[in-house]
Amino acid sequence: MSEELDLTWAKDQIAAARVPVAVGNATLALLRAWGEIEFPNEAQQNQALDLFSSLARNEAVVEDKNETWQTVYVGFDVKVGDTVRVRKDAFTGDAGRVHNGRQGRVLAKRSGDIIIRSTDDKLPFLDGAHYPPSALELLVLQ
Image (tube, rainbow, N blue to C red; front, top):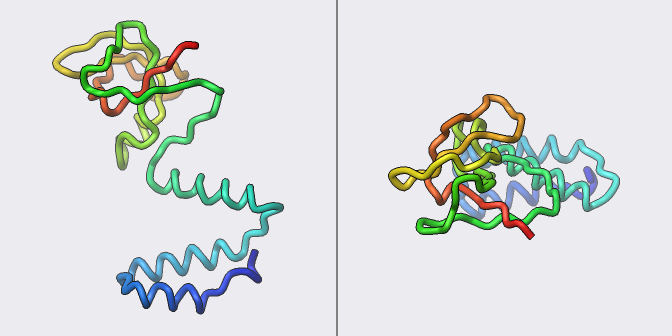
């Protein structure tokens, strides 16, 4: 990978785009670190980029279990007992680290919120956590 990385070209791109200095410096630091990593193939390189990007945004990394999840909208028919998951990017910051990607069962629906109890064996245990419908995905049983 390192022979493919051209920092001069990257600096020119950053300058041409008139990127703020702090953003440009951070980007160049990341590119320097990236240039030191050897990947066995392009697929793993792309996977690392996707994973880094998600984690840097406090998005949850959810295991693909060949399940089908459908985004919940206001007015969507979510029932008590349904299995739901908080969208991987529903919240930012500390809230994102606690709630994004969490899975649970619907306990109730009140005042427009969907209230869940976590079932994913992660900490902290969530019992009675309130979410707007737009933050959730519903497990579609096939």
